[in-house]
Image (tube, rainbow, N blue to C red; front, side, top):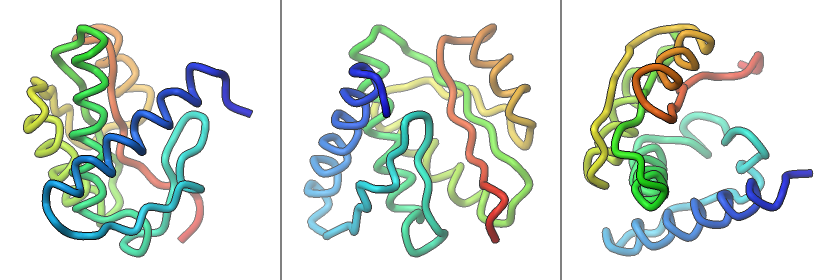
Length: 131
């Protein structure tokens, strides 16, 4: 069960995504079940795709700016979908006014290090053990 702060962030992200997508005049299928306590999960490209990643970047960037953060570290793993999803995420963050520190293909602990030494937050584009 997510904490109150986590639930608020999930709600903010979903609301921001819906607001962002309406500006582009297209409907985006958003699975609210994809939003977990510490991550967003889904099957590429059915649940997670480039428009969704860009919308997430805009939403996260908006939330980060509200918290006084101006930079976000972004990393990805070696999955084939990583470069495209990461690029879309970065486009969304930049559109929101965030300076992106793209650390490239790194392990999650390396992204944590970047997010704690170069800025205050980070996003790792990675997958689970599922195909």
